[in-house]
Length: 340
Image (cartoon, helix red, strand yellow):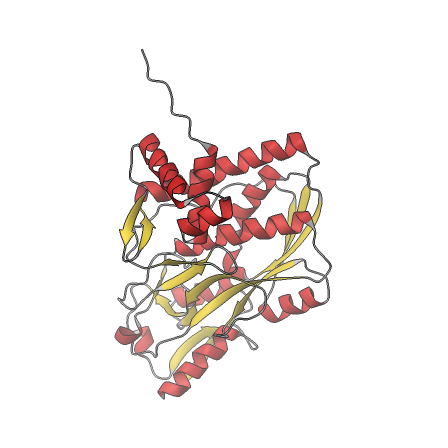
């Protein structure tokens, strides 16, 4: 007689996902109204059900094992389906528009996953995405033409909006051309001004006394990737979403100055609270926190970064964490338009 399939407990899955998002199962206990001992029993039950350890010690905290990282993606989808089913039966569906602005870095690596999850739960909501530079996005939010916008922020202190991720800036060069970064003056492939990455690159080089020249300028990220892959110059970006033809350079090996970290923030319009916008913002923050956490670790020892799953409660990750095999190429049926 065949063994009966295991039915995962939705409450236990919600505890698991909430604890990972908050970076602490003690905080999850408070959020979910359960005692810490009850949370521990739920996690033990989940590990018994799947037959694999889901968490491991990482210093003073906990990190996901490879089975834990795999289960996390399934758990999110199961909870999305559960919540969509309850919403469809118990109350009116969300409708209307969400007007989103974002930088080019996330059009292929973050946006498709968000759209897929949102469309499944809220098919009546239309999403309009505008891909622009930071200055334009901020102006559009202030003018009330965008409900939400992802923007880069170099300020070390608390800034506008909600902190979604904290990533290092890195020098980027082509694979197989180690000598490009040694050229003087250093050839650069950058966006035209004003550009936060351009300013950071030239400021760091000037401070280090390294001569440079603009070898290639492009208004689009695809153009920069092509120029660097062709050996026209090095550029500066975060390690998130680098094409296979490029690599993050170790500053010491390349003879380049170290770079600061950068913050990704979600800013909101002032038109008031809309349920569809609020739900989209929640999914966007969750998905990008996962996507940036799963960015390939930098090859040099000092590389580290952290990310947040909620505005005030940081969840830490380090390059020593177990690798994950997540893909962000889910097809999306959400009705949306993408404008550049």
